[in-house]
Amino acid sequence: MENYRESQGTVHGRRPQRREPEMSLAELRGAGARMAPHWVVPAADAPAPVEPSRIHGVVVPPDSARLIASTASEYGA
Image (cartoon, rainbow, N blue to C red; front, side, top):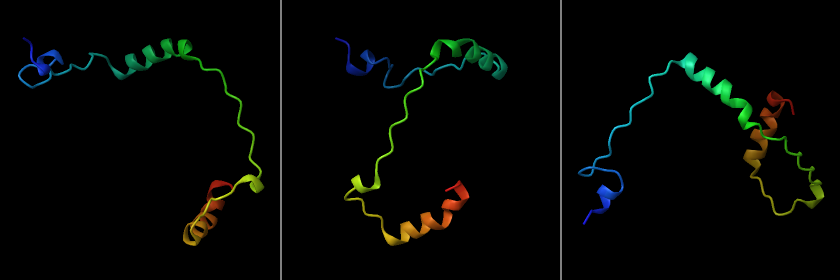
């Protein structure tokens, strides 16, 4: 009877080491560029903004609110 560890691909409790592919960064980038067209994801519609009057039960501590307000201009707000 095979024990659990052997059935999970280990030998004497050790997993075999994986070998990294013999590929340069340029080759890897080229392979990714060739595969990219296969992974096109359609653009999702942006969710509609929620009216502030519909937001209930959100509590922001005063210190956090001050921190956000003092740094928001750095992010274009």
